[in-house]
Length: 282
Image (cartoon, rainbow, N blue to C red; front, side, top):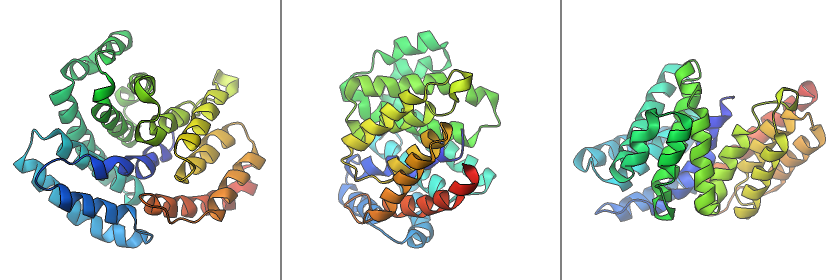
Protein backbone atom coordinates (compact mmCIF):
# COMPACT_ATOMS: atom_id res chain seq x y z
CA UNK A 1 0.00 0.00 0.00
CA UNK A 2 1.06 3.60 -0.48
CA UNK A 3 0.53 6.63 1.67
CA UNK A 4 -2.68 7.37 -0.23
CA UNK A 5 -4.55 4.69 1.69
CA UNK A 6 -4.57 7.09 4.59
CA UNK A 7 -5.03 9.87 2.04
CA UNK A 8 -8.52 8.45 1.67
CA UNK A 9 -9.28 9.97 5.03
CA UNK A 10 -9.40 13.55 3.84
CA UNK A 11 -11.59 12.46 0.96
CA UNK A 12 -13.94 10.31 2.94
CA UNK A 13 -13.82 10.63 6.68
CA UNK A 14 -14.73 14.27 7.03
CA UNK A 15 -17.84 13.85 4.89
CA UNK A 16 -19.84 12.30 7.70
CA UNK A 17 -18.65 14.49 10.55
CA UNK A 18 -21.27 17.19 10.38
CA UNK A 19 -24.04 14.79 11.31
CA UNK A 20 -22.51 12.69 14.07
CA UNK A 21 -22.15 14.96 17.08
CA UNK A 22 -25.17 14.78 19.32
CA UNK A 23 -24.72 16.75 22.53
CA UNK A 24 -24.88 20.29 23.90
CA UNK A 25 -22.03 21.19 21.54
CA UNK A 26 -23.89 20.16 18.40
CA UNK A 27 -24.35 23.58 16.82
CA UNK A 28 -20.79 24.73 17.49
CA UNK A 29 -19.26 21.48 16.25
CA UNK A 30 -21.44 21.28 13.17
CA UNK A 31 -20.63 24.85 12.16
CA UNK A 32 -16.90 24.35 12.68
CA UNK A 33 -16.83 21.15 10.67
CA UNK A 34 -18.87 22.59 7.83
CA UNK A 35 -16.53 25.56 7.77
CA UNK A 36 -13.60 23.17 7.32
CA UNK A 37 -15.34 21.18 4.60
CA UNK A 38 -16.25 24.29 2.64
CA UNK A 39 -12.76 25.82 2.71
CA UNK A 40 -10.88 26.13 -0.58
CA UNK A 41 -7.63 27.24 1.07
CA UNK A 42 -5.67 24.24 2.32
CA UNK A 43 -3.20 26.42 4.22
CA UNK A 44 -5.98 27.99 6.27
CA UNK A 45 -7.13 24.55 7.34
CA UNK A 46 -3.58 23.36 7.99
CA UNK A 47 -2.91 26.27 10.33
CA UNK A 48 -6.32 26.52 11.96
CA UNK A 49 -7.50 22.94 12.42
CA UNK A 50 -5.07 21.95 15.24
CA UNK A 51 -6.93 24.25 17.62
CA UNK A 52 -10.09 22.32 16.91
CA UNK A 53 -8.29 19.01 17.47
CA UNK A 54 -7.36 20.22 20.94
CA UNK A 55 -10.92 21.37 21.49
CA UNK A 56 -12.36 17.98 20.54
CA UNK A 57 -9.87 16.34 22.92
CA UNK A 58 -11.27 18.53 25.69
CA UNK A 59 -14.85 17.64 24.84
CA UNK A 60 -13.98 13.94 24.97
CA UNK A 61 -12.25 14.42 28.31
CA UNK A 62 -15.57 15.74 29.62
CA UNK A 63 -17.66 13.01 27.98
CA UNK A 64 -15.34 9.98 27.56
CA UNK A 65 -18.26 7.63 26.90
CA UNK A 66 -19.87 9.74 24.19
CA UNK A 67 -19.78 7.58 21.08
CA UNK A 68 -20.55 10.56 18.90
CA UNK A 69 -17.69 12.67 20.22
CA UNK A 70 -15.27 9.74 20.03
CA UNK A 71 -16.11 9.15 16.37
CA UNK A 72 -15.87 12.83 15.59
CA UNK A 73 -12.46 13.08 17.25
CA UNK A 74 -11.27 10.00 15.42
CA UNK A 75 -12.33 11.34 12.05
CA UNK A 76 -10.82 14.76 12.53
CA UNK A 77 -7.44 13.40 13.67
CA UNK A 78 -7.33 10.94 10.79
CA UNK A 79 -8.32 13.56 8.24
CA UNK A 80 -5.79 16.14 9.41
CA UNK A 81 -3.08 13.49 9.52
CA UNK A 82 -3.77 12.38 5.95
CA UNK A 83 -3.81 15.84 4.47
CA UNK A 84 -1.01 17.66 6.26
CA UNK A 85 1.36 15.41 8.25
CA UNK A 86 4.48 14.10 6.51
CA UNK A 87 6.63 13.40 9.56
CA UNK A 88 6.48 9.65 10.27
CA UNK A 89 6.55 9.93 14.05
CA UNK A 90 3.85 12.61 14.18
CA UNK A 91 1.75 10.64 11.73
CA UNK A 92 1.90 7.56 13.94
CA UNK A 93 0.89 9.59 16.98
CA UNK A 94 -2.13 11.05 15.21
CA UNK A 95 -3.10 7.66 13.80
CA UNK A 96 -2.87 6.20 17.32
CA UNK A 97 -5.16 8.94 18.65
CA UNK A 98 -7.67 8.43 15.83
CA UNK A 99 -7.65 4.66 16.22
CA UNK A 100 -7.91 4.87 19.99
CA UNK A 101 -10.99 7.06 19.85
CA UNK A 102 -12.64 4.85 17.22
CA UNK A 103 -11.87 1.66 19.12
CA UNK A 104 -13.33 3.16 22.30
CA UNK A 105 -16.53 3.90 20.39
CA UNK A 106 -16.57 0.39 18.94
CA UNK A 107 -16.16 -1.22 22.35
CA UNK A 108 -18.94 0.93 23.80
CA UNK A 109 -21.45 0.05 21.08
CA UNK A 110 -20.32 -3.27 19.56
CA UNK A 111 -18.65 -5.22 22.33
CA UNK A 112 -18.66 -8.53 20.41
CA UNK A 113 -16.86 -7.01 17.43
CA UNK A 114 -14.45 -5.25 19.78
CA UNK A 115 -13.71 -8.52 21.54
CA UNK A 116 -13.23 -10.26 18.21
CA UNK A 117 -10.39 -8.05 17.04
CA UNK A 118 -7.82 -10.48 18.42
CA UNK A 119 -9.52 -13.57 16.95
CA UNK A 120 -8.69 -15.43 13.75
CA UNK A 121 -10.26 -14.09 10.56
CA UNK A 122 -13.22 -16.49 10.35
CA UNK A 123 -14.05 -15.95 14.01
CA UNK A 124 -13.77 -12.20 13.58
CA UNK A 125 -16.15 -12.36 10.61
CA UNK A 126 -18.64 -14.17 12.85
CA UNK A 127 -18.57 -11.26 15.29
CA UNK A 128 -19.14 -8.81 12.42
CA UNK A 129 -22.45 -10.53 11.73
CA UNK A 130 -23.73 -9.15 15.03
CA UNK A 131 -23.52 -5.61 13.62
CA UNK A 132 -26.67 -4.44 11.86
CA UNK A 133 -27.58 -1.43 9.77
CA UNK A 134 -28.09 0.70 12.88
CA UNK A 135 -24.44 0.07 13.80
CA UNK A 136 -23.00 1.32 10.52
CA UNK A 137 -21.83 4.67 11.84
CA UNK A 138 -19.69 3.01 14.50
CA UNK A 139 -18.44 0.09 12.40
CA UNK A 140 -17.56 2.26 9.41
CA UNK A 141 -15.95 4.88 11.61
CA UNK A 142 -13.80 2.25 13.27
CA UNK A 143 -12.81 0.58 10.00
CA UNK A 144 -11.84 3.94 8.52
CA UNK A 145 -9.60 4.76 11.50
CA UNK A 146 -8.16 1.22 11.37
CA UNK A 147 -7.17 1.76 7.73
CA UNK A 148 -5.35 4.93 8.72
CA UNK A 149 -3.62 3.22 11.62
CA UNK A 150 -2.44 0.33 9.43
CA UNK A 151 -1.10 2.77 6.85
CA UNK A 152 0.85 4.65 9.52
CA UNK A 153 2.33 1.37 10.76
CA UNK A 154 3.29 -0.42 7.57
CA UNK A 155 6.62 -1.26 9.19
CA UNK A 156 4.75 -3.48 11.66
CA UNK A 157 3.88 -6.92 10.29
CA UNK A 158 1.20 -7.32 12.94
CA UNK A 159 -0.56 -4.30 11.49
CA UNK A 160 -0.25 -5.63 7.92
CA UNK A 161 -1.69 -8.95 9.11
CA UNK A 162 -4.90 -7.11 10.05
CA UNK A 163 -5.67 -6.13 6.45
CA UNK A 164 -7.95 -9.16 5.79
CA UNK A 165 -9.99 -8.21 8.87
CA UNK A 166 -10.11 -4.60 7.70
CA UNK A 167 -11.36 -5.74 4.30
CA UNK A 168 -14.00 -7.93 5.94
CA UNK A 169 -15.18 -4.95 7.98
CA UNK A 170 -15.73 -2.79 4.90
CA UNK A 171 -17.36 -5.68 3.06
CA UNK A 172 -19.85 -6.01 5.91
CA UNK A 173 -20.53 -2.27 5.71
CA UNK A 174 -21.30 -2.68 2.01
CA UNK A 175 -23.55 -5.65 2.74
CA UNK A 176 -25.48 -3.58 5.28
CA UNK A 177 -25.81 -0.49 3.07
CA UNK A 178 -23.46 0.25 0.21
CA UNK A 179 -24.78 3.81 0.03
CA UNK A 180 -23.70 4.67 3.58
CA UNK A 181 -21.45 7.73 3.73
CA UNK A 182 -22.01 8.16 -0.01
CA UNK A 183 -20.38 4.86 -0.92
CA UNK A 184 -17.07 5.40 0.84
CA UNK A 185 -16.73 1.72 1.81
CA UNK A 186 -16.46 0.95 -1.90
CA UNK A 187 -13.56 3.38 -2.18
CA UNK A 188 -11.64 1.71 0.63
CA UNK A 189 -12.30 -1.69 -0.96
CA UNK A 190 -11.20 -0.34 -4.33
CA UNK A 191 -7.87 0.77 -2.91
CA UNK A 192 -7.38 -2.50 -1.05
CA UNK A 193 -8.15 -4.51 -4.20
CA UNK A 194 -5.58 -2.49 -6.17
CA UNK A 195 -2.57 -3.55 -4.16
CA UNK A 196 -1.79 -6.84 -5.93
CA UNK A 197 -1.00 -6.93 -9.68
CA UNK A 198 -2.79 -9.46 -11.91
CA UNK A 199 0.48 -11.36 -12.44
CA UNK A 200 0.48 -12.21 -8.74
CA UNK A 201 -3.16 -13.20 -8.57
CA UNK A 202 -4.71 -9.79 -8.04
CA UNK A 203 -8.17 -8.97 -9.33
CA UNK A 204 -8.01 -5.37 -10.53
CA UNK A 205 -11.46 -5.49 -12.13
CA UNK A 206 -12.89 -5.95 -8.64
CA UNK A 207 -11.17 -2.69 -7.73
CA UNK A 208 -12.60 -0.96 -10.79
CA UNK A 209 -16.11 -2.10 -9.90
CA UNK A 210 -15.77 -0.65 -6.41
CA UNK A 211 -14.44 2.68 -7.68
CA UNK A 212 -17.16 3.01 -10.31
CA UNK A 213 -19.87 2.22 -7.78
CA UNK A 214 -18.48 4.86 -5.42
CA UNK A 215 -18.42 7.49 -8.17
CA UNK A 216 -22.03 6.69 -9.04
CA UNK A 217 -23.25 6.67 -5.44
CA UNK A 218 -21.51 9.97 -4.66
CA UNK A 219 -23.01 11.58 -7.74
CA UNK A 220 -19.50 12.39 -8.93
CA UNK A 221 -19.23 15.26 -6.45
CA UNK A 222 -16.29 13.75 -4.55
CA UNK A 223 -13.46 14.28 -7.04
CA UNK A 224 -10.95 12.46 -4.86
CA UNK A 225 -12.48 9.10 -5.83
CA UNK A 226 -11.27 9.58 -9.42
CA UNK A 227 -7.81 10.52 -8.16
CA UNK A 228 -7.61 7.33 -6.12
CA UNK A 229 -8.88 5.26 -9.03
CA UNK A 230 -6.22 6.75 -11.28
CA UNK A 231 -3.41 6.31 -8.78
CA UNK A 232 -4.26 2.79 -7.71
CA UNK A 233 -6.29 1.02 -10.39
CA UNK A 234 -5.06 2.72 -13.59
CA UNK A 235 -1.42 2.55 -12.59
CA UNK A 236 -1.79 -1.06 -11.47
CA UNK A 237 -2.93 -2.14 -14.95
CA UNK A 238 -0.74 0.43 -16.76
CA UNK A 239 -3.67 2.15 -18.47
CA UNK A 240 -2.32 5.63 -19.15
CA UNK A 241 -5.34 6.72 -21.17
CA UNK A 242 -7.75 5.98 -18.32
CA UNK A 243 -5.30 7.44 -15.81
CA UNK A 244 -4.96 10.75 -17.63
CA UNK A 245 -8.66 10.95 -18.51
CA UNK A 246 -9.67 10.55 -14.87
CA UNK A 247 -7.22 13.20 -13.71
CA UNK A 248 -8.09 15.66 -16.47
CA UNK A 249 -11.73 15.17 -15.56
CA UNK A 250 -10.92 16.19 -11.99
CA UNK A 251 -9.05 19.27 -13.16
CA UNK A 252 -11.93 20.32 -15.41
CA UNK A 253 -14.55 20.18 -12.65
CA UNK A 254 -15.16 23.03 -10.17
CA UNK A 255 -13.88 22.37 -6.67
CA UNK A 256 -16.71 24.20 -4.97
CA UNK A 257 -19.55 21.94 -3.85
CA UNK A 258 -21.17 21.85 -0.40
CA UNK A 259 -19.15 19.62 1.98
CA UNK A 260 -16.67 18.68 -0.75
CA UNK A 261 -14.83 21.93 -1.45
CA UNK A 262 -11.82 21.12 0.74
CA UNK A 263 -11.66 17.53 -0.50
CA UNK A 264 -11.94 18.59 -4.12
CA UNK A 265 -9.30 21.29 -3.73
CA UNK A 266 -6.89 18.64 -2.48
CA UNK A 267 -7.99 16.29 -5.29
CA UNK A 268 -7.12 18.90 -7.90
CA UNK A 269 -3.72 19.45 -6.34
CA UNK A 270 -2.96 15.72 -6.34
CA UNK A 271 -4.32 15.30 -9.87
CA UNK A 272 -1.80 17.75 -11.26
CA UNK A 273 1.04 15.98 -9.46
CA UNK A 274 0.00 12.59 -10.85
CA UNK A 275 -0.44 13.99 -14.37
CA UNK A 276 3.03 15.51 -14.27
CA UNK A 277 4.40 12.08 -13.30
CA UNK A 278 2.40 10.24 -15.98
CA UNK A 279 4.93 10.29 -18.86
CA UNK A 280 7.66 8.87 -16.63
CA UNK A 281 5.43 6.30 -14.92
CA UNK A 282 3.98 4.84 -18.11
